[in-house]
Image (cartoon, rainbow, N blue to C red; front, side, top):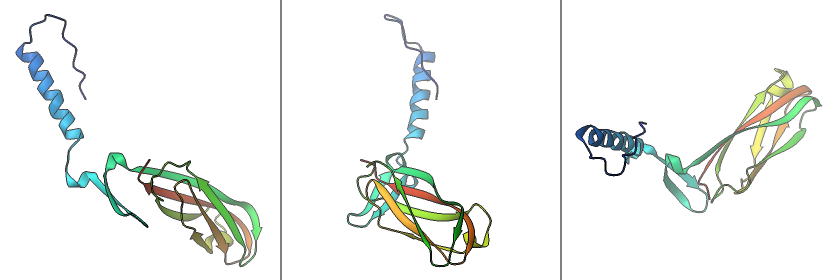
Amino acid sequence: MAKIPLPERGQPLDVAYVYELAQAVNELSKEVSPATYDYVTVQTADNGPQNRKVTEVRVIGALVKVASSKSVTPGEQISFSHSFTGEFRFPPIVTATPINVGQTPAGASVSLILNDPSTSSVTGFVKFNTSGDASLNVNLIIIGIPN
């Protein structure tokens, strides 16, 4: 966005300066448009849907390392957690995706379970369905209404 130079005290305002002001205001209005597509709805468990502007929603992308060249057996579970230090007013929406870092059969055959997130953290576990060595990460996408 254009930065408008401040006028000197006593400087007459000419058409060019007023034009610059109007142009900057028009650019600013494009940035803060009240259009409906600039809103996000976050469904909360206890407080229903929360409609907020995109700029009023917090999104966190996180990676949690679960196993690194670890020998696993069928049915074995490894817990994981991620803290986000109380940044949310309500428990956020959390999506988790297991990533088979080692490209191994044991890492490709997993179940991932998330527990109810709190306003400051999320926990879960990965359950392995086959045996072997596994290197596994979990990608998290966390979306919520900040404090």
